[in-house]
Length: 322
Image 1 (cartoon, rainbow, N blue to C red):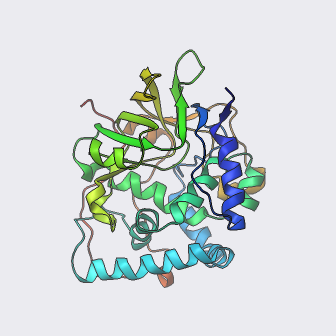
Image 2: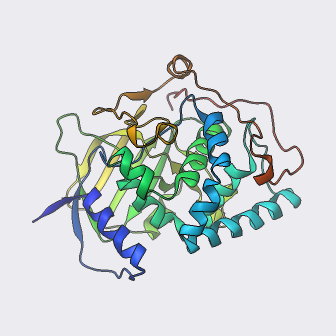
Image 3: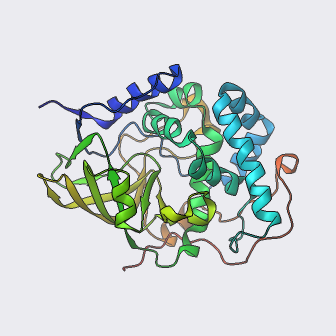
């Protein structure tokens, strides 16, 4: 049996996606879980406002839409859908600092086919700062999706919850490291319903306790999926593994850990940790890094500027026990 890294598979799938080659159901692949070392895992801690300024001044969204017709179509469809949801008052109360772009990014991810190419790109986008700057063309989507999850986290009820994920065509295996720690290394869709998760595959099946996942069903065209979206960098430990059914039980370490932070501002010369040095588990950790929970309309021309929909409760990264 040959086991491969999920990063190698992601790179291959990314090439197929870019070439427009259809991916058909094939024989099952064996993959060992790990810390997803090539994932682009930036959390933009302490630089959110500056990121918005630079993305606007460089017209980054326009450039990225021009590079990918499918992304352009997905983004524009999401803009229309977000406008409709706002006008029909179908949105829940939104946290302070939650912009229209945050909502649009969630719709792009949850309601279009873009999520697949995006996640494959995320899994290999952290190969190096140079690779991220030159080859990763989802910078805007990554930024707004990452920060949207952080802002929405408090509005999801219990901060730690049990969710499920089913996979087809892949037999995952536990990490080979002694501590059994792992990250998915991508934005990972899960469901609060075990039955819903099984519909997406049973070749591998995960039961997870997540402390950073956010329920996004109200920002999706598929609310019946009861989706909880996990960030790229939540760290889990494998508590149990059934080799016969390839079923896992994962427990959150109550930490997110990243190698990258504010990379777009520094460019190709950005310094990247060889270890996962950006680890956060509490508001105190974030305060030390100068995190700011709030966004300003620094790029008003690109905003939809809908009526005030914001509430005044702030976001938190404090993980609490179930």
